[in-house]
Amino acid sequence: MVWIPGGEFAMGSDHHYPEEAPVHRASVDGFWMDRCAVTNRDFARFVEETGHVTVAERPPDAADYPDACGTYLTIERCRYFIYPDSTQAQPFEVKQWPATTIRITNAVRR
Image (spheres, rainbow, N blue to C red):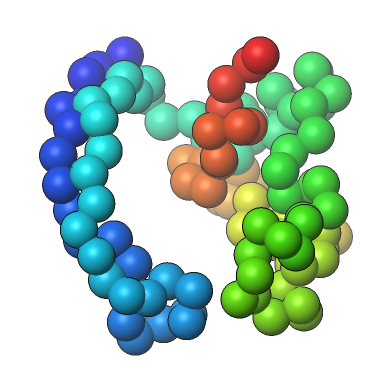
């Protein structure tokens, strides 16, 4: 693991989804990060071996996303962000890509 120091950054967007606006200053505390990337294959193996249900596979609660379009509050829509085209087997190349959309609730065992 390597230590990533905290700092300030511009968070949000004034040019994309309405719920991302306005751009504002935010800060993050320092944190530890794995030195090596976790691939989609690694994460899929973790899910399979532990029976973990990812955030993307849980029905979203509309109360958590008051300004989101209801069309996007479905399991299938959310799953796309972790498993592109999850209805089919991933090609080898995708399985080797780093897993980039894992939420903290999917990364930390309780």
